[in-house]
Image (cartoon, rainbow, N blue to C red; front, top):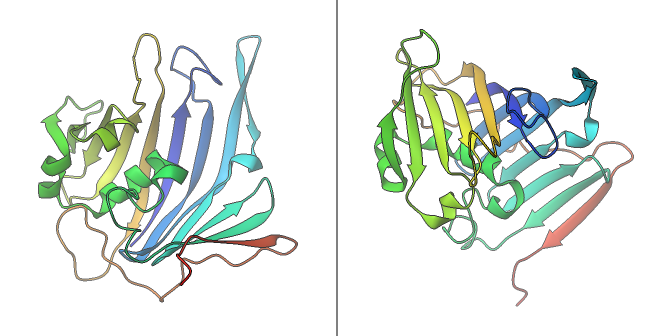
Length: 238
């Protein structure tokens, strides 16, 4: 599975307090070769600067991101420190609920949440969320749903998520992830993500499941020239 995404982050602390102008905008790519081999990469990042009521967009390389997983090993490109960090975890820990959504809950928060939902069957949503239809914001025939978390672990990350599912092919088209303390009046902190250019195998599987394809390990980043390699091994030494 491959797709491009565009992301708008509304942050009343570091951006507009009225919730109308995003503090940050980014676009990039998400791909998966199997359920435990995937990559999330921000290829372009901008931040807004408001001066005398006018908004100016400037490049923000420090907000670029690159996260990847290859089974029990997770990778992060740290653009600020110019490091490739490789984190190795025990095999029996990475997919447990305590460890996190992708084994990265403590690292990437709602980033992991939104891309995990790409793997879910619609029937599986009701195990974790209260689901109800909401009014579409446009004139499309897509399905708009609000997901409210049932579990405390999810509620710590977000108060609700609006998802847009295509009527024609059941693909996830967009999401609006609202902060755990979201309030339209006092704290309009939320993140909108649009998914475009979906690419799937010839054999389709219904629902929001990611169908792995591609060369094994193609999601793992290489060390950029001039960067350092850092290995953090959390496996128990025998």
